Length: 274
Ligand SMILES: Nc1ncnc2c1ncn2[C@@H]1O[C@H](COP(=O)(O)OP(=O)(O)OP(=O)(O)O)[C@@H](O)[C@H]1O
Image 1 (cartoon, protein in one colour):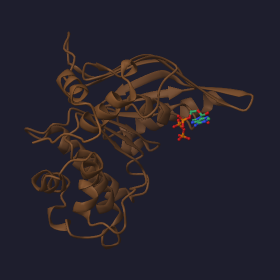
Image 2 (tube, helix red, strand yellow):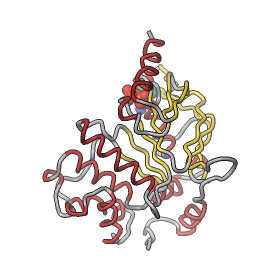
Image 3 (cartoon, protein in one colour):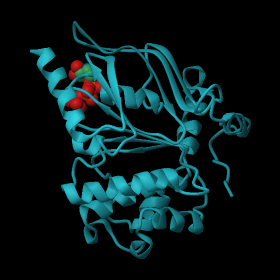
């Protein structure tokens, strides 16, 4: 059972949690709905429009990959969708909750309870065991860690027997699994992953992607949608759908793609820039 954070307004927490409900309409419901997203960075006298009117939905039950040339806005899109960055304009709706309308406290609660994020770097604390790393978000939120939840998150990523190991006693793939278990411990509805296999060899990366896909389809699992940024066509081909960005805009998508199809589309985008 979820405890209450000591530093937040309980009424805010209840409001955000009650709002989680995938939007239903015609066709598949949407886990994340993004409309007209614009994000401009200003450094010194220069402006870079990282996102330029992006509208896209990430449906429930779907594994989506985001691809595009370097600097096309992939990470910015992921960060805005996950509530880690605020757009200049446009809307991000996660499970029926409009992120753009939330104050910092409500946004923090939504991220904590409904959104998981995994980076290329595993970002584990070396002095803590796998189980202690996984329970860290709960502790930071002022909750008493639930041992069953932590054990379940580790079991979900195939590490039930590694709970007492420290990061330096684990392989790279196992460390990334711990990072995924940490992202899943609060049972988020959406998992965002920025180059999750970037630091892994091909075989280990493939195993990790299979684990991610299994998590999405797990009976009784809370995970509704996975959105992943990658540079690798082979990795992207594990997704149900690949969407392509160029210069901050959506420029196409492929459904059930092969690696060759993804690579061909990327080659086209790269040559368009020359
Ligand atoms: N914090 C920032 N300050 C200034 N400019 C930024 C910042 N973050 C991103 N940008 C710029 O915004 C644009 C989009 O960056 P973003 O990191 O989203 O692209 P990307 O497609 O993820 O790139 P890569 O594949 O190289 O990681 C780039 O031109 C980048 O230089």
